[in-house]
Image (cartoon, rainbow, N blue to C red):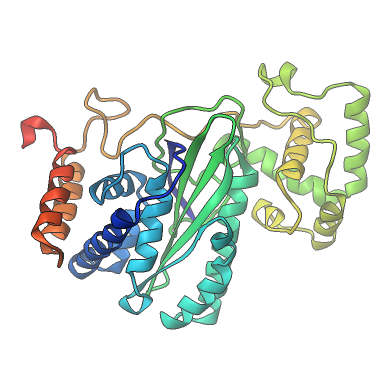
Length: 364
């Protein structure tokens, strides 16, 4: 699994008007079909793994740049627009629709002629991506939208979104096939408007020892964990103020002991196997991290993985100079797709106008 990026978006309530949504279904579908014809279905997935391209694409088909609907409605329109017989399947969705993802993976996997082992792995990837963003990266956002995009070659992308109900913001997470680990340093390109302060980032490189010790604690004996918690209670140490200088990690006293004893019986080989066990949720993950840090002296990353960034760099050189080739290529692909799409001239002109807003004035 590969986390391709994260974006923060203001949460907008309501629904897209039917007249707009119907057009988005038609327009988005045509653009994706042209990209698939010109560059192949795997290039379509590579693009959706890029949070910046995704943002531009949603703007081109009609959304404001900072709307939370760029995720839910854009993917909802594409799910209606694309037939898996064309080589790309979109499964999952918002709320209850996300719960149907495993069944939809099975159904569409058969249409795409994927092997049973590949279908099972896709279900595992979908489930684990959600588990990581809900429990291992504890950034204050709860997932409410989960979509997996699958190609006929078995490649895939997960795009999911969480909500911070206190701040009324949504955060989007992009995952794609490519790297070996779900739980170790999965980020490659991350954007956002806001950086959260109270984050427990157990997928960071700095948290490697904490992940290892968490597994060792579980494999040793859950009874020992209870003794550790009794000790911590006796010291009245309930936060890591003295160790980290920030109130970021509260010791959860309500722990799923059944899940921990189940993990002890399974004897997970690594952290990925540990978090995949049913019942190992955010509180249990946090408790193990707390014990590993306070008692065994491991390091936990408090760093929010969201960064202020752009797809190809910033005009002021921060965080990096603009990559003109990547910039031009992204514009070229969208423009070619719009021009070749089987849609009316009016729709094409409106989309091209929105696309030109991404082009710097001196490059027009």
